[in-house]
Image 1: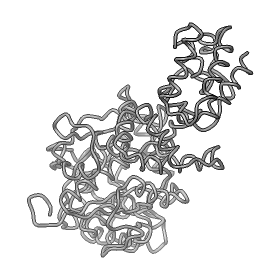
Image 2: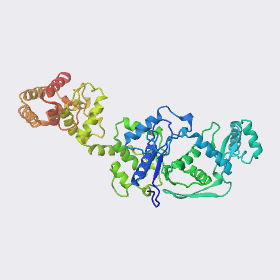
Image 3: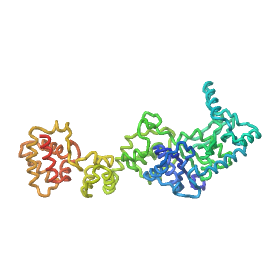
Image 4: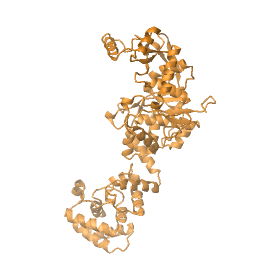
Length: 487
């Protein structure tokens, strides 16, 4: 139910099909979803495609796929019919036209016959006079006979709303409190374009009313348009929904989040291997917080905790380092079996697609590396030696760890390893200690060289864990290859 009333909560996410899903759009969708589910309400996906010039082929399908990946299901939408469809604006044109004509009959809107050339001339004069650019209301008071004559002649026209010339409009925003805007700063907005398509402003109001939307939760950029929308609701005599405008998303330098400073598409974060749980957790905190020190949340926990009262007004900084940390934490919370499934999916799309790894081996790799990785791909990127022998060796480590006596020490070690039956990691350790003792050198003289030989690098999990996972024969092959290559 709607807070404070008996009306069921109905909210919507209404993107335009213009390409990828911006992380700001994901936040809007998420907050609407969390609010609806917290109040046992409905979450609707509506496609706002009235600007056909910006429509991108395949964008709707991509949008649906991305929301599905993020785990944010909608109750009604283009492929989930409800009682209030169709859910694509280009399929509702007759409805908008009828309502535009209704506004004209009410005296709340008017036909405008100004040509693009005249409008451009007016704009240039206003700029030259250092005035705010807006329509000069030239057609606002045309007499009825003149209007009918121009319509009969087939003159191109649009429909504009009649904004009051004096006074101001105040409304309460759930996040920002009382907002007041003077009518004199509002333009006589175009509602119906000459091609018969509505502008966003008419369509959004008509749709929100007919789809019984109770709360409009959207980005701060729509705040200046809200008085126009409220005027339209009042002009039709409709109940106005509750408005809540979310804070801007900012780059670390406090500029508005943009592609110039980093990735802004959800699809890009998905392709980079971020877990959906981490991205959703991160996006939830871009403006909202639970009021305590907790930072790790599942989607179910967010549903239980979410409220508009805890959404702030200030811009939210998009901190990728925080997102990376959350990805690490959410990956740590996954079971080895879950990670195995994701790792196999990653391997299937990599250079190792044709290589066979049994589950037991991969689970051992996961156990050895899981505290060292933040992404599933890093099981391979940070430890490629578990998937293929090294073909080159870190020159810095070679310079520091590979000495003139190293090849002979490693030959002796190969001899010790060869005598082992079915060695556990403790057997590898004992064999290395015997070699070091017999050679009268410290264990470290051999340990670092062996790590370099079997992995090609100087860091990673414990050496004996690596040797045990690779097995005796593979370990010996790699040590021998290093002796041959490095000399």
